Image: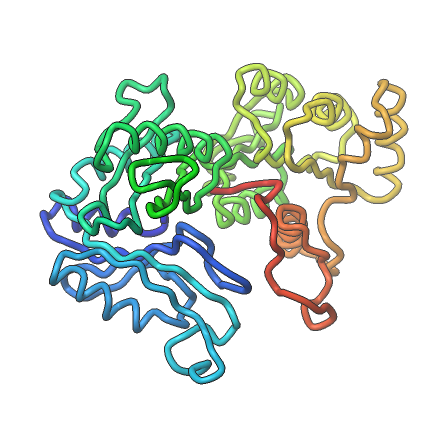
Length: 385
């Protein structure tokens, strides 16, 4: 939903009402994940997408109806033998889309949620999407960590329901996940009847790019495109400048191994973090990889270099005491075999490997594979939010 926040916030601040459609659940080869949103502004303009084009027209019409009558709705879109090319997903997927009217009246603390997200503070919204009592549908909690100044705002309708949903929403927030939770009508954990969509907005995952070279600029652009908060780090101040890396969120002058160790000690890296070591200079990358490969929480660690460089690097790391299990975590030479030559092409191959590892992809052409196009996992191994 982050891609539509700016447009939705503009409508909200102007005192208007927007129709907001959010994917809350998917089945089979659905093109957009839970949390994907489309906003219909009061002037009819659209931002975002719930299906990549398959059902946008139908959702647009429904959003207008919801804004007009104020009644939120949960609508399922998919295909059947009779309407595969009518309103539906010809790719064979099914989407559950929740459509609501968003304004200062219906979502009074929306601006505070956006402020939290922009400041990289974790926050989740929990919205009732089905309930036996229609008056509960659309009610919302905003849930933050217990240590926050205002841990919870809003109510679903009862203290019991609020407590149950708050606990489970925090679990999803810690995991960086968004999904529908099922409870009894009053928040009973083993009951059915109430469904709550929790949109977890964890801070953006980090991409740490070590080595301020031309390839790093291209990798930083790809990382930003994929939704990572990108840091470029190099010990050489003459190369590590913001002007050379305009798409990076941070440019740091520090010895790479020292910087990573400090970030790990501060709890600033986690299982969603990806590390790209591009220096292919042993005085930089061997001490850095000694630190990185001993951090069990890092999601992806890749290092650039030729096969000869890779072999030499492994020998040096073994001499430093790293085990075969630790070395097996290293993706090197970095990237997928795309035949890349330029920095931009190489950056695409690196991004492709990160995505493949995140979702369990093979890296093979889809035309040469069978089965579902989208790999099904409970959660990806490297989550960008």
